[in-house]
Image 1 (cartoon, helix red, strand yellow):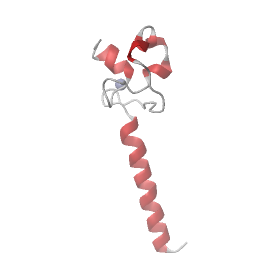
Image 2 (image 1 turned 30 degrees about the vertical axis):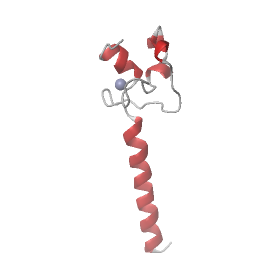
Image 3 (image 1 turned 180 degrees about the vertical axis):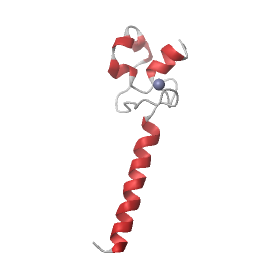
Length: 76
Ligand SMILES: [Zn+2]
C-alpha cells in the first residue's frame, strides 16, 4: 500500500466512525440507540421492561431514546 492509498483509507475510516457515532447515541443518557426499528408512541405501556424498546430512538423526540422521553423527561 502506498502512502496516498493509506491516507484515503484512513479518512474514510474516521468519517465512518464519526457518522456511526453521532446519530446513534441518545443526547441525554448517551446510550447507544437502535435506529433501525421504530416503535409507535403507544408502545410505551409496559415498555420499560423491553430493553430493545428503551434503546430505540423516540418517534416524537429525535435524538433521544424512548427511555429518556417517557421516564426521564416524563413526557406523555
Ligand atoms: Zn436516553
